[in-house]
Structure formats: structure tokens, C-alpha cells
Length: 437
Ligand code: SF4
Ligand code: SF4
Image (cartoon, rainbow, N blue to C red; front, side, top):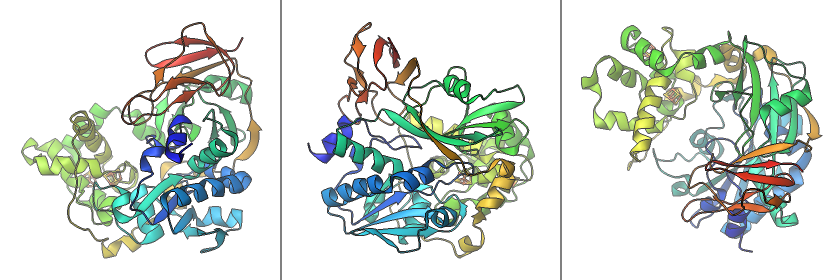
């Protein structure tokens, strides 16, 4: 089967982030593949574990993409501390045309635009695709999933994830897609009291979830249990309206949020202090300025580190992003941009970032405990990735086997969905539930 078709049929989407269907990135015009193993945020050990245990599979996936797109080189990008643990050195040849690229221990190294710049020296024009600079970017787990699809004909049915934070022992494990978070917690003996919140994703960019109802989807990289009084959680607990209200009254326009913004430092026309100004004076909200909100990568530096007034420029920007998203509007720059000279001096060391978020003391290397796959129920979301939700092809009460396609890709950007356990299905508008029989 054609590689593009295989990726689509196998249900491969970006592992982490918004879940962009991976097949859609396979295009002509690139010369370099950058594989993201940076694990930007503290407490996450998912990609590290995959690289440690499954490097040959990851390299198999990388080589397949290189051959399909006729790419001359691939750079497997990891941070220094991960490289040290894996025994990688800068420029080390890992396979034919595949080299290790060791990046500094700074935040946010895993942001796609930052990653491309750090790994290749190329700076993508604001709002443009990496392909415009000859680069395709995939995550480590995506390459692993591709290799499994090629070698064994397997669709994506399991997810690697870190379970960490304020718990006895952080772990990395594999579970079926759709496993309920509460079932994982029960199996690991984790209880969550009222003084803690559960976050899906990293401490800064992740979101608070209801662990009683949430399930693991294809983009889940981590589930963290964190105290409500650490900075990372406090800033999420303030609701968006309150955050915007605070911005309206307390901002002194010191510009520190802009001075530290990684996208601004890359030369992008994103100035969070001006966004906050629009909350104080609607007259400042010009269409050109508002459009630049889509250039924000959501790193949270402005909110958690830069601002001393407790203001969240990120919340103001998120408001605009939601509005622009609904109207399918985004900033697309025509001109080249250049990183600002001060960028080198304003990088944030990973340790400082972990301390700022209040999570440094929970950062212990997570141990891999293998696959747990005997859960009685999974809830497979039909969406939760960019593009059209998969279309169910099974009926209520039908029995399915693991790996069987239960929903197919729709026209346009979309992927298929496979059963992650054996059982009987219940189909709704948003998910396919499977109960083991
Ligand atoms: S750092 Fe805070 S006070 Fe300063 S401009 Fe930004 S939002 Fe306003
Ligand atoms: S979250 Fe703040 S610091 Fe990060 S990119 Fe967006 S505006 Fe810049």
C-alpha cells in the first residue's frame, strides 16, 4: 500500500499537540525530516522511553518517510539531558542519512517553529508551513506507529504515556486508545484528593481534565497529578473571563511579556503586551494586531514567568484565537523574518522553567512498566484530531476485534479509527464505546 494511504488507514495523527493527520505532511518539496524527541515540558518521559526501548522501530519509520519523500537527511532532535541518557552525541549517525541533533536544555524547544530553527537554522515565515522551508516534522511516536503499520500491518491501537506528578512513582506505560483515566489510576493505586488537579499534557501547555470521565486519546502524552497551589495549576484554575478582567485593570505595559515571548524573539510580529492593551482599550484592537494572535504557540512564558502582575496575556490571546479559529482566519506572513539578537540571552533553562511552574520536585525519570491492556471498557473519540471526525462503520451491539477498523476517514483531512480492545460496540455521535465481552 502507498505510504500515504497506509498512514491514513492506520489512523496515524501527530502524537501530542493538536493531532494533525500525519499522511497530509507527506509532500514533495522537502529535503529534511526533523523528528521531534525534545519533550519540551518538565515531567514528561514518553518520547525518551520510546527512543530508549524502540529506537530501531523509530529509525525504520524515519527511513520510510525519507525514501517516500526522497529526503537527503533526517535529524532526530533531543534535548541534552535526553541525549546523555540515551548515549547520543551531536551529529551521531543513527542510520543511513539519519543523525542525532542535540539541542540545549531550554524551554520551549519542542515548539515546531523553534525546533526547526534550532535543528536546521531555517526560520519558517509566520503562519506558513514547515514545508515552505523544505522541512517535514514528525514526532518520535509517529515514526514508531508508522513502523508498526509497515512491519505488522497494525493500526494505532495503543498509546505510550507518562503518568507522573505528585504521586509515589512516575511511570511510562502503554494502554489501549480510549482507556479511561480513572481505570489507569485505579490500576496504579493513584487517588486524587481535592487539593490536586489532573492535567492531560505538560504542566504548562496541558489542560485540566475530569479524571473520572476523561479517556486517553491519540494525542495524550501524559497524565499528571499536581497540587492546586503550584503555579502551573493556579494559572489554569483562574477562569478565562477572570484572567481577561485582570488584564483590563492591572497591566502597566512594561512589555516584559513581549521581551520574553519565544515567538517574538524569533522575529515574529507577536507582541503580547499589545494584546493585553486591547483588553484595556478596545480601540487598540486593530484587525492586523488581532490576527497575530494565531502566531502564539501557547507556551505560557508570558503568563507564568514574565508578568509580575499576575496577568495572563495567553488568556487574552486564547480568546482571540478561538474567535479567529471559528472564522478560519490566521496570520500568514509574506516576508522573511529574522531572529532577534537578544534571543540567545533570553532562552529559559529547563530547570528554571520547572521551578517557575512549581513542579521541579516532582521531576523524576519515569520508569517503563510495560503495556496494560486488559481494561473492560474503552471510549474511542471519533475526533480529537485536526480534520473531519472519523465516520463509524459498525452498528450498536456489533462485536469487534482489536485492530478492526470501526470508523473510516471522511473526505478531506481525516483518518480511520481502529478498535483498541475486543468487545461489543456502542456508537454515539462523538465516540465508539467498546465493552469487553
Ligand atoms: S508583563 Fe504583565 S504588566 Fe507587563 S505588559 Fe505584559 S501583561 Fe502587562
Ligand atoms: S504563550 Fe505568551 S510567551 Fe508563549 S508564544 Fe504565546 S504570547 Fe508568546
